[in-house]
Length: 534
Image (tube, rainbow, N blue to C red):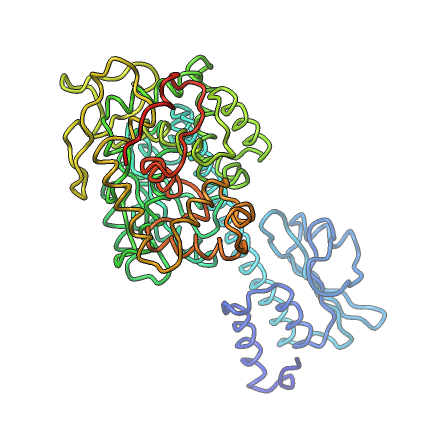
């Protein structure tokens, strides 16, 4: 681009206005600025760094010694002419070193051209410093995000000591708490970065906000107090396609379980007008069982893990919790390990517990046992009326006491703790409150003219495999998938993605006697023979 003719009044100001235009947000590109200068003064222009590497423009031959004097600050600018060329060289301070702006043209440099070169060098300095500041800010934000993820992954494997140490340097006091709430905010993947920043602002940077490594649409928030709940609800409600799921209050060591609760609540939030839900807002089968009997059963089932070293046991528990909720790939992303590591740990847990994780009833049973350790802290056992259970069950929080009603008003099951022999899963599911819950839940499917209930039972019995279920039913696999998908809004639970929602439906089928109890090695011999009265 060529400016007005030299010497005219407009020529003295037009180039300056054009140079300022290069600093607008749509500009700010060193290459464009150099190209503008070349067109304005009708010259060849180059910008090189201290080592002589070309940063912008076209190569312009220059004396190496002269360039070195400029780079090392011995001179600030230089002019040279000869062999039909006129050169101007100006030192440009770069973020890490110094560079040289070289301008070569056939005509001598008049005042306008000389001023344009000098001011362009100053603009390039400002522009490159701003770009470096922006890049540095981006690197710092990326490093902070990576640290937050590392802290979350440490919490997921119950390494709260290391998590606090990592957090203390950058966010003092962030994890100075024994308990926390976990939330999952879901939005559009393309909006997640902005959503994460808004979550940080909404919680006043007093919560651990992490971009979920497994689900591109999710932001995970670990909040040390309950003030985050209304703030996040206020953030989510006006935003389209945005939902919030929250856990109950849990100890930091139970972050993995609380995360599973939040994901489960998120599924409910999609059907709620306010687009938000908390885990305790829905009837859960474990809240309808006798707490002492449930805790004792879970401790007995998980007892083979008690002999492991603490760190190893914590890794297996955290991996199994996430592996039962998500695919191996997504669980690996959350934990920061390989998918093969997740599969190996899951296989080891299967072996120790004598469970077959291809069987959805076995998965549901183990999930229930693990979930027994992850109950609201305010429901924790320890009073005289509800003594702590032995074994691993002491580490988790207890559920509601006998006779307690959940938020939907269903009474807890009758106390089974006084029975002489240990209670197995069938007996836990035989309580009247669980039976009532199971009947009510599955009866919702009967209103549909299609046999959603029969399809769902066959699909669960086939391990969630649509093709195998279709063969048993004599229908197309797509029909099975459509029926399962149609059951999701009726039951207010996600089924095809697996996880906690599916396991509750599996437990309902077990309680209703529509599926056989799973084979689990630690169960007592008489457990599978216990009657389940529907």
